[in-house]
Length: 301
Image (cartoon, rainbow, N blue to C red):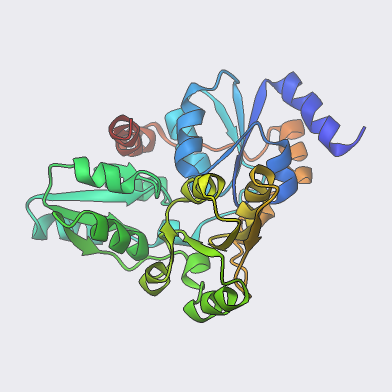
């Protein structure tokens, strides 16, 4: 029996479901029950009937799934798969900003640790950040941890005043204007589709800016046939699967999240066999960090 058949067999035996982010390797996406970005997967996790969730992504995603599903077992194929940006804020700065601004909402990107979420008012993803920030009654927004997404949201919600953090995604931060322009010279008919975690200079030369799921949807609906994709290269799998006749290009230095690529079929099989790498959060942390996550799901409806 090959590894894929073994995984399918164990899924049935263990009443398990596999969730995968668009950035994990192709073969992992191919065997997943649900594939999506952070927002989609956070919504899906709440309504699953299966008792065990195997979350193919990085640590903050597993934490969020456990917080929203405290009675379910959440397993991570690789416990070392992490997101550097998820740690790029701190409680002290949040408290300092609350003292400085009376009418302040701390808006926490879902790409953050549960520890950071518990000091926040609401969570957002790149897919719903603009909608949620617009819906908040507060005048001032302290957006953590990503400065690039914060600047993009601010440009879409000019009625709010933003306070910026210094965090960033090391993968999206490395996308370079020069390489995009080079790709554009090679493929002049291609549109540039960009994730808002990229730097402002990259957003300025883009034809479309949106979440990973937004990029996929735009490419699917567009009459154009060629696209330059400015986000992590794992999205290529879904783009090509949905659009067999279209062409997708990446910059010369392809954006790769090495933590996402730690997730393998062998590791999925191992956690299904052993039940190891289970995600745990304390009741206090679950309650405190669950509130901004639940508020996100409520406001994004």
